[in-house]
Length: 147
Image (cartoon, rainbow, N blue to C red; front, side, top):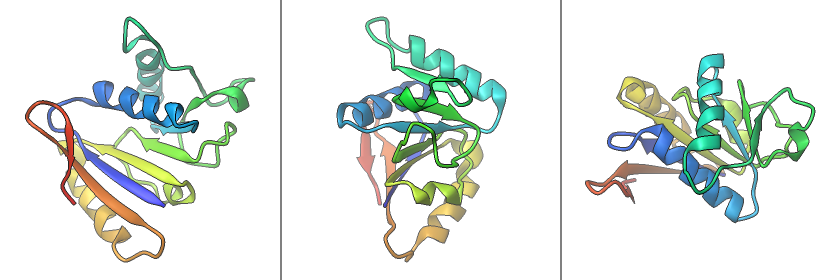
């Protein structure tokens, strides 16, 4: 399983998450997006509908009658999702070990969560079957793997 740590220093989550979601869907996958706070989930819901004037990401919030059909599902926790997603995006910066049940985890965090991200990074070191990668933002806004 792969865990990608995305340190948000230049581009905010609002610009980064939709690109990751697009790539997951383009590869035929499904995605679970996790944020504990209801207000954060509402914000993510609005973001995925309106992040681009040319497009939107089909999605829903967990607890709806069509959860199993949603390519992207927004939820409060990383419990096995109704949409069968094998990819999880941790959008609130709070690492959850439940993410290790997926094939791939995207852990987004800003400066306010850097200490927690370091703790999570260290806790995953040497764990069998876990491949960690740390991505940092370049000057122009792209990403480069730093570890």
